[in-house]
Length: 235
Image 1 (spheres, rainbow, N blue to C red):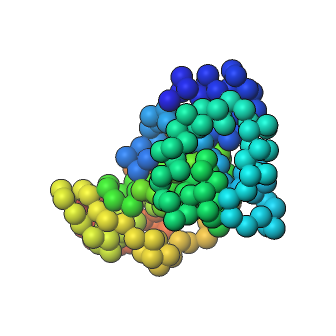
Image 2 (image 1 turned 120 degrees about the vertical axis):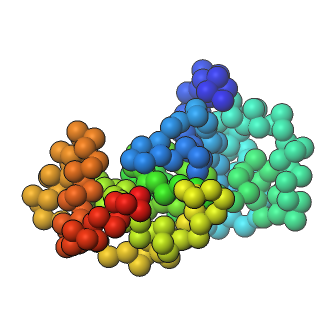
């Protein structure tokens, strides 16, 4: 909770370094997100010595360093040591320390620190811009990029691409919910923007003129009036 976060930081300002806001799939909206004031203690295996590749298995040295460098967080987690140690007894306390995250995203954690586009794995077809340093639960997909990020955000949220993605993904539950697949995003062809097009997109985004963005995207993909009419009627 935010109250617990403030308490940990008050006890030890160093705590802020490993506290990150986190979003769930349900928090992803079209173009934006809602924040439920949830926080993640991001603690990799062997933290704070996690960059030492010579460490194998749970390390008492790492735990002592964690206790010394982050005393407030360590003492907070210590109250739950029994529960944390029992998470996966084949690994916890053997492969990694009792206080570390069970699955900490070693291969992509740095991408979560970057600006990114995110969308739900299950739900409505929404794409959101997520600023740097905000983490995501595994109920989302994300693309970490800074190149043409708002242009790409606009393309993905357009009526045209929403229509296409929904035709490729699996519809579940009610008519607006889908099981989304990363492979379908990978198949998508996006026209490379000119500086003028990207500038226009940014102005339309700032004005929240999403209908004009839809029209611009139709022109980028050279759709006919009949095709546009069909997609609009299907939306």
